[in-house]
Image (cartoon, rainbow, N blue to C red; front, top):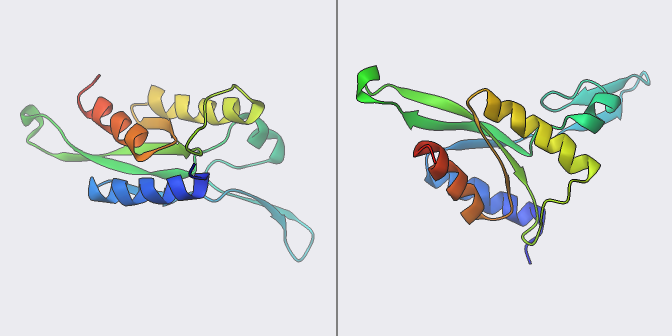
Length: 133
């Protein structure tokens, strides 16, 4: 069984082979030298908000060549990938629900968003998006 970190590394390598750009989105909070809490990561504005809405582990874009009617212009489609260990199954935990909310917002706005526990699950989501499955 591969842990989440290993799956993430494999997905990033495969994404690169496909021409996709995915970047690690570290997120969390820490206290600075003055004692002020500093939040970091995409969309992290408070610990309360972070309980209900969590941005994905990998954030980036998938280049898509659009139809000839649009002069073959290439677009970068926002891509969010929440990485899980190999044998992971969605269980609707509080954390997973918060992660899914972020993924749903990306999808509703035309992006590619997925939970992935393998290279295969990542590639399937990209192919399904490209071919509008």
